[in-house]
Length: 385
Image (cartoon, rainbow, N blue to C red; front, side):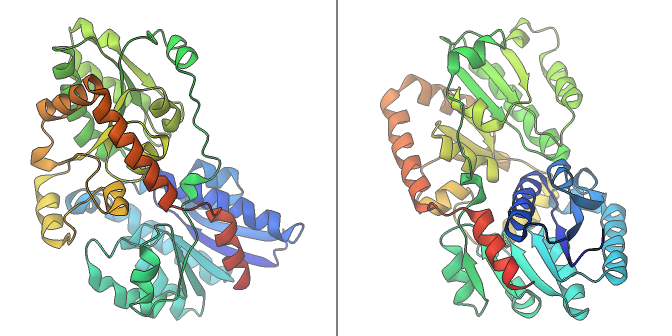
């Protein structure tokens, strides 16, 4: 295709892949028959939207300092291929989604090549490593942020910024059909149900899912409960299955667990409580309105380094938006199975407590606004083409 516009677009994990795909679709819709070529990194959704992938997010899914070291070769290979392709066919604009360790380096290189840089879903420098603001001011032409308080934060620090709304809200229509959803998975709709969302990266799952599974065993000691284990598109269901078998080997209660590849918002919508990995999935749980707790666990080294750098008293996105701790946070050493189980049972057994959390979660949704983030982002990107 003889492209009139070439766009470099780079995402490094599952949610950014989804948001990147929507942005590409909006740009194509906005520009009609005008030939546009997209290339970069992403996942299946961006590829299906017509992005030529130079690397898939499966190769880039690492968490923490220690874990990321094992993926340095993949990072370097991807970085070099993006630079080479950009030299071969210079992009009209570079759109970088989240993934700051990689994308801020790429932003510097793009600016040296005279390419305009738009950063969609900004680094959470208000929480940790705030000195990165200098790089953002120098190498990013426009920040498109998705959390309401970020606009003022960046603007006060001399960055061109726009709050476009949160893309998670687009088409957010969870399927509240408990009878059909649970019955189709041979589960009892009348029985208490807990959703387990361990993350979209294999390393996250390896650290967090065993804790959640142990918590499930603790819950089952006190009450008849069934569990829906969400498996993201970037995670092999067989790997999740092996972790479950390792934890529940010989335990008849394994029949109470179901691996589910359905959309996580539907899993949440048909559950009474949820164990949720910190990150975007916690915001999704808030938008659904199901009571939940936020948890996270990585290697001791990565946590020790991160603990020194993190500047906020709360870490969960939902609580940061609310300005108070409305959802329990259990991180690293506090992420004990028995404590996760205690909280789950407490919320399921006390309707007033669950109702109070649901009310505050509804207020969080209101604060996120009603803008279509992908459409708003597409308008800004178009102004740079």
